[in-house]
Image (cartoon, rainbow, N blue to C red; front, side, top):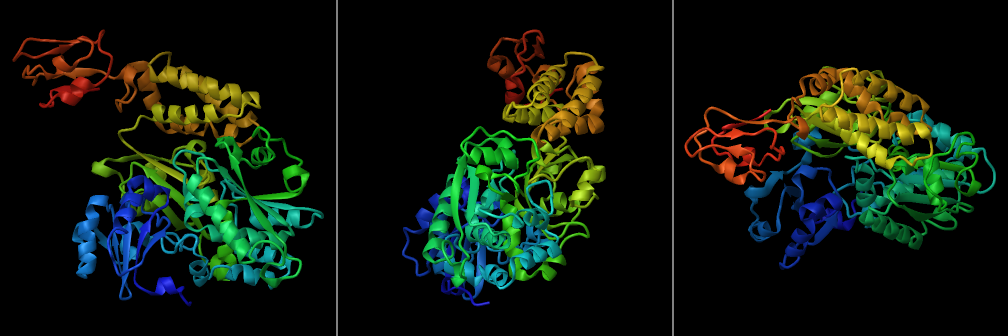
Length: 586
């Protein structure tokens, strides 16, 4: 491989994707540029280590030194170390990412450029086999390209896992104008893998769509994403412009007569339901984003009535990767039934959060403990919520299960787009179910009654239970309604919305019963069921009494104080200010 000139010489890079910017990367970059350094300073995308942002990498004499959690005030000392050819020990992470536990079990094939190249430097992308996949594709007949994708075993990365080649064959047989769509509308809590790829390696998505256009005969492409992703939109718009200037979009692409294709970007208002392809199509057309009954399928009647294929951002990234590395090599990665890799967002109660790319077949425990490092502060992991608000919880006894669509189904959950949220023992599972139901209830488009009304009733019941109201029989009513909503909703939002409820009842029924029978929240999360008790070791310092906003605490100086539970508003101020561990929260 011949590197782009910029990649073969000394340089300093700063990751300035959204996660880096939120941690202060722009300030670090601006501060670095104030110094007269003999090494070029470049902006890159996200390398995935969110827990270490902002990240600065120094490439020098064929070696690299990676620094993490670099702040503006660290730059002066960092620059001095660079000039003195010394390591800045205070912020040093490693010399090679493969040294870190976070990366050892990853398999970065789609994300290999992220955080390494400049996202909008076409030469750098090409030096990393960029557009080599497109070149390989146009040397084949369109149907042979589909065969390659089929042989590779690529399944859609949007959540459903539908075979990509099957979807492409439907539309390839159609005549007339056809459209390929990139679904970049990820809206579930804890999901930002699509945003990361759009910001860090936009040419890979464009290349994947060009390959899909050649294979299906589409002349028009649309990238649909949400208005809340301004950096991703700006990056893609610039990348499209660069491709047009270099005849990688437009007429006779790569001098191939008749290979005409162009791209536009459509912005959505940020509705979660628009992740569903028929709702997305409605939004593209300027209509309210609501799912439509199928048939007709988008391959028959999609955007503006034209045959349309919709694939997720990650899927298009895999398409480019397959055609770059070859389907035989790609097929060697992953499990028997699910080939390749999956990009996940690991978040919640783990030490190492971030965007990871792992081979299918890896065990869930390897993701949580080996890559994520387990829970901070020696806490125990209580559950994993794969699939965000659409996935049910997986408990530790099932962490031996493999990451693939079949194993997830056996666990009565889904992989979803790739949001993996870990919760530790300090979490209340009733509260967690309520959190996800609140999200899906707000995001329901309102078209079908089971979802519109059912999620609202489910949320009301969870709110009631979290307050300790009702009777234990309400748990069975909650379960019954959840099953009904799941079976009768029109689209995936309503069908999967009850999963957090059903799974938490299955695995943590005792917690529900404790809320209703004993009127306690074991985790101390549900405010209405929390009690603050002053213990016998109270020395009567009066700090709690002085800070109580409602005068619920009484007691004389140097004597044990007491809390009037009828007045207590559960604000926890007394618990926070007690310096003698004399107040118990239960």
